[in-house]
Image (cartoon, rainbow, N blue to C red; front, side, top):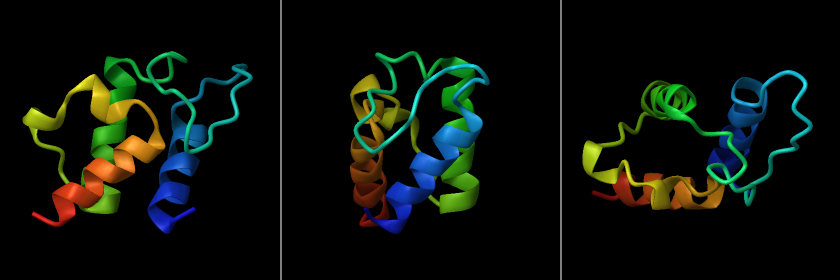
Length: 83
């Protein structure tokens, strides 16, 4: 697991999983299907990516397909870093 993958999994587990939810997040946890990402949590995730990771996500990338799981998010971030 890469450093970015670990950071994202940790952020999601600590900040987006509600107290009382019995969800253990890993890099392949389906974030949308599981209900972990709603509009508010997505905004928190985007803020984390912008501030802590240093990669702002442009509006054109705000497609549910890009937020299926941590693996997909990491791939999108890597693509944006290479531009």
